[in-house]
Amino acid sequence: MTLRVLLAVLPSLVVAIPSFNINLTAAPEVRWKGVTKYFRKDGLAALNEMQKRLKSSFSEEDVHNWVQGLKQERPEEEDYKRELKGIAKDLTLNDPWNEHDMYEKLLLFNAVYELEFSTGCSGLLAADLNGTVVHGRNLDFNFPYQMPDGSWHNWEDLTFNAVFYRDNINIQHKDDMEHQEDVMVAPMFAFVTGMHTGMRFGGWSFQQNTRHTNDHKKNLKELMNGGRIFPWTARYLLQHVKSFEEASKKLQSFHWAAPQYFVLGGAGQFEGAVITAGRGTETLNGETPPVQRIRNETGHWKLLQTNDDPNKESSDLRKPLGEMVLGLQQQKDVSSGFMWDNMLAPELKMESTVLTFVSIPQTGYWFTTLKDELRPLEQYYSIERMHRRYPPQHYPAPEYSDTTHKGSTSEVQTENASTKNVGATKWARRALLSE
Image 1: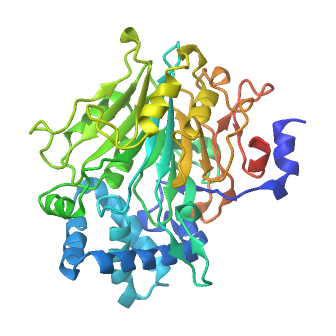
Image 2: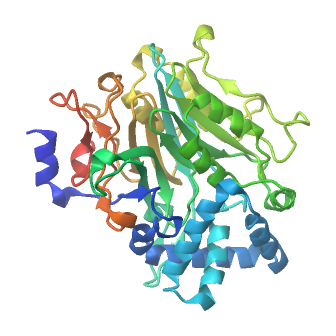
Image 3: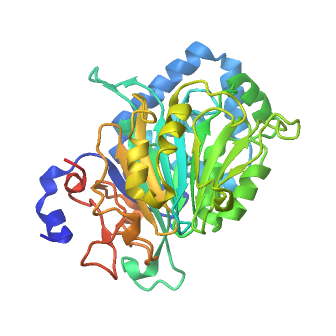
């Protein structure tokens, strides 16, 4: 049975991680209508929990200052703030009295890291013998919120895949996929327009990790002093910067409101780096260690980053155990399966792991699993079958992203599809997961 037939006959086996197509050519205010509609109940419950936490841990003056700091004008952030205004309008059903208040709540929701609500994460880069870099990411974040019916949900209930595309200038038929260009993909949280994780097709991959010197009081001071939060800047770079090297340089140059780590993989041979970013001018003061890079000539074909500076002792067992296990493995074995095995192993996967995202910028491969899902089947997702760069997979382009489909979508090559891509799990995600 071919994969296409399998996908067509097994719609009942779908499990939930929605995927949305986001049209970057559309006006920012309408790009997230489908997402807002789909996640309305969960999103409002999460926003309510956010307000409770802010009320219990922050003064009214601090919350006001955070909002004012987040409203500071930066050209590269304006589209994403316009998107939030569109979401606020949809959530309040065009009620102007509540729309402004909702917009401010959404601004704060987009700064959960800088507000110090995030605690974990791990990332792994590994290059095979040919220099193809595979990037694995575990996002660890516990944020329980109560639904109107009394049940408790968490971040995984707000998680979806977003495939961003744009219409070509010479477009003739709006629904003709030949006139659309895929730009990037990211697992995202509803009502958050910035990115914590993502991949630019043919370019580079990105993730952000918590650094333990994170402190919301210091972050606010730095924000008011011109520092920026990371999610909007990360999305802007993924959207506009094509190369790994340029992205790496830019991430090192910004004035950040909070300390953190950035893990980047590239489409070029042996392109991989971990950037330790300081708050404000910490780098200049010598508080931040230098960039780590994959260097094949010295035998450094892998990099593991959790939540500690590379020049300091680990505060937990993830990194020492992970490096011990990696030390028993060989570079010739690097593949997507290698990455799934390591990211889902007990030394890296935690109870608070919301999602695992594996990507290969050189081939365009990507896949997302939620915390309770198993790894995808290796015969459908192997780097050996994906070394050749294919044209990006084109997805149906609903106007304003008003339609959704269940399942993670990624580029897949089957044995009988050597010259084209098959969109994985559009209807039958379970069929591609291990038993």
